[in-house]
Amino acid sequence: MAKLATGRVQKKSSHLLDSFNSSLPFDKKLYLEDIKGSIAHATMLNHQKIISDDDFKLILDGLKKVKEEIESKKFDFDISDEDIHMAIEKRLTELIGDAGKRLHTARSRNDQVALDFRLYVQRNNLKIMSLIKELELVILDIANRHTDTMLPGFTHLQHAQPINFAYHMLAYMSMFKRDYERFEDSYKRNNLSPLGCAALAGTPYPIDRDFSAKLLGFEKPTINCLDTVSDRDFALEILFNIATLMMHISRLSEELILWSSSEFGFVELSDEFSTSSSIMPQKKNPDVPELLRGKTGRVYGNLISLLTVLKGLPLAYNKDMQEDKEGVFDSVENAKLSLEILTQTLKTMSIKKDRMQEACMVGHLSATDLADYLVNKCGIPFRDAYKITGELVAGCEKKGIDLSQIHFDELKSVDDRIDEDVLEHLDLKNSMNARDSFGGTATKRAKEQIEIFKGWLDEL
Ligand code: ARG
Image (cartoon, rainbow, N blue to C red; front, side):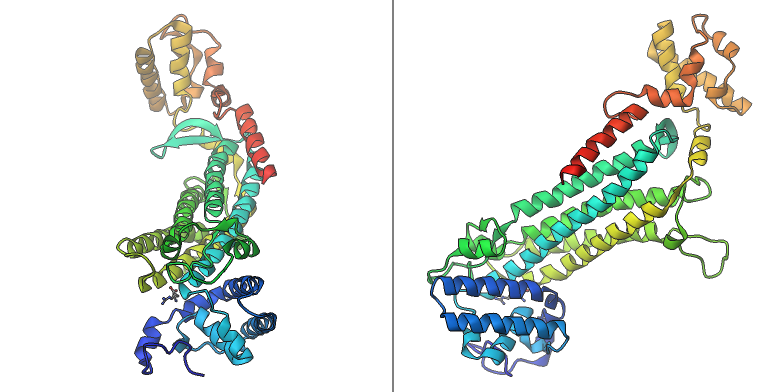
């Protein structure tokens, strides 16, 4: 059957134009949203007596048939149909005749595509939120088991102060909580229906936008039609939210890669989520976190692409906007896959408590505690205490021991006010538990943080 719209342009389009112009190869992904939108539109048209009951019934049956054809792979996707909206409408008209031609009354492809794409983004906001929740549950479970597992905390990738592994994982818990809230926030802000905005100016038909908005699960209709058909902020938001989520995933991945190296040996990824080398039989490679880190680049690219496409566009719809979809599809698919595989990787990895503990014996992690002791016990000004401690550390380095192993006599010779209790301050576990300010690493504070996050997750 011939192309649907044969208005001002009369001659058959060139094949080159068809393939350049068509979004069908990628927007066919929106077929469910398109059918859902058409059902809501037809229901509203019928409710407002703009189309008859008979036509309405034919449209519903026809759309159901189209859906079946697509799902059973019988639907003929023809590139000259330009996009999924035209393809479905053409097939509907082939199936039901004139009633099919009435469906587009009081609607334009501009509000139609804005609706379909928004429905897709909203559905995926919710899906990503539920995947983040799954990830958070696994992180919480790891944290629960490791509130007393000590490892060095780093700054500049140098050993700094002892912390516990729960506390370290709860830092990621915090990041993913913010991510969750960003998707939730975007979902709420964009929960408005574009349907009924028509080409750019609204429509003279007596439509009811509130009615169709409710049918589609939106809170209400958008306010200004000119903005609505030009607006892709909802798509930019999901791209930004994914970019930030992937940046967090990438930072965790980087740590997993480091931790599973023989230099660290803090974790071992399960065989199920590791790969081997084609030539070196001894190798176990962290391909999963490496790919997660790598994929972060492309989702940044998708965000920048769409920002750039939109920046110079006059109102309202311009065909440039057809370039909005592929990047969003790509980011959404990669974010969902990344969340799923990260969750499984964390769930199945083994945590090497002893190696973490051993690593704490390198780097004089309780040096700050000694300086604090000299301040509090001996009244030495902090800068002097810092210098004295530094010299003691240098002495330990020469002897090849950690500051926590220093002999009491040596400390006593520095200042006579130093008591035996200094050794407790140098003990690494005590050093960790001394950091008990709100939000700190002390085991009791880590447990408190777990309760806070658990409370948040329970409410979702
Ligand atoms: N395929 C188009 C897109 O994805 C649909 C909207 C077309 N509207 C138009 N006036 N040409 O943006």
